[in-house]
Image (cartoon, rainbow, N blue to C red; front, side, top):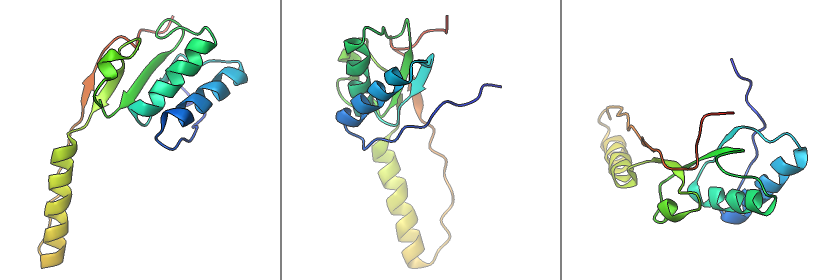
Length: 124
């Protein structure tokens, strides 16, 4: 029943996460949680929050996507969604080869894994 908040766009780099964080802070009504399209943008968002004195996860929970090397070393360690990109690549190649050969390519769901760390907490 919750209404989604604003959708801010980034370019997958930490600087755009930082800019998005500054925009969220400038709007004055910090959401309780943010899902970010990748972990690198989360890195920039965490920096913007820290500079403003906002605490993660006490003031805002953050979840990234990728689980790239080092997200467990962020402060706080980042909750993220892990996608098996090697498997994703294999499936894409299988689908492409099937399309080229004119055979049917069965659809295949890839299930990502939620890696819960310390950047999330229940809302207060």
